[in-house]
Each structure stands twice: as C-alpha cells, then as structure tokens.
Image (cartoon, rainbow, N blue to C red; front, side):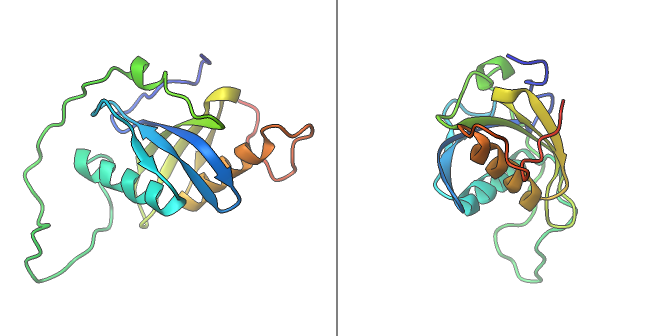
Length: 159
C-alpha cells in the first residue's frame, strides 16, 4: 500500500468503483462505523449516501442546512458519539473492480465538499474544491485506466 493510503480523519471513506461508463458509476463505499459497505448505482446516490454518512457522524459539520419553521421530525438531536467498529487498516483493504479512492472530506461549505482524494492504485493525492471536481477526478482516473497514453484531461498531478 502506498504512502498516501490512509484514512486520517473520522469521516474518511474508501470509494470502490465496480462499474463505470460516462455519467454512470456503481460500487460501494466503506467506512469504519459499520461492517458492511454502502452500495450506490449512480453519482446521485453516492453523493446522497455519503452526505447522510457525514450527517450521521456529524463531521464535517455543514456550513449550510435546510431551514424550516415547521416541525419536521428532523430537528437537531443531541450529539451521540459514534463508535468505530472497523479499524482503518480493515477499511483500506477494500478494492473496487475498476478503481479505489480514499476520500477525506475536510469541509462542507457552500453546499459542497472540499477535501482530498487519493487514487489508491496510483498512490496519487489531489485536493478538490467541490463535489463536481471530485467526481471529475474519479472519472478522469477511470477513463485513464487501460489507456496506453494518458489523456490531457487527467488532472492527477505527481504526488
């Protein structure tokens, strides 16, 4: 395993991609708070399910939230400490058929995510400023798998 392959944060996840076509992705992401992975069958599901995970562990705390003056049942609860049940090393063992990425969201600002993503197979890490930019990084990495020459669009710089 490469030098950049670590979780390093309570909300670190391993994103395992099993199927990919332009504008379509499916796979599973893993984290230390449950033994089974969370499957997704498209980009929207992946983002929504990861966002729900961040909300569940309350980290990173979002800078914007949905507001209403009606009682919805979604009122903030007292923080309940989540306990990790799987060690980081176990989470990092999971791999996707096409590619695997460690995603570390450091901030949830401007209704998006900011953080770092590590392409495990290439041991390359890049910072991203939005969910869209993270998705493009994953797509670029997957597009370059199996290609003889790297595409000019691949934005994974040298680590």
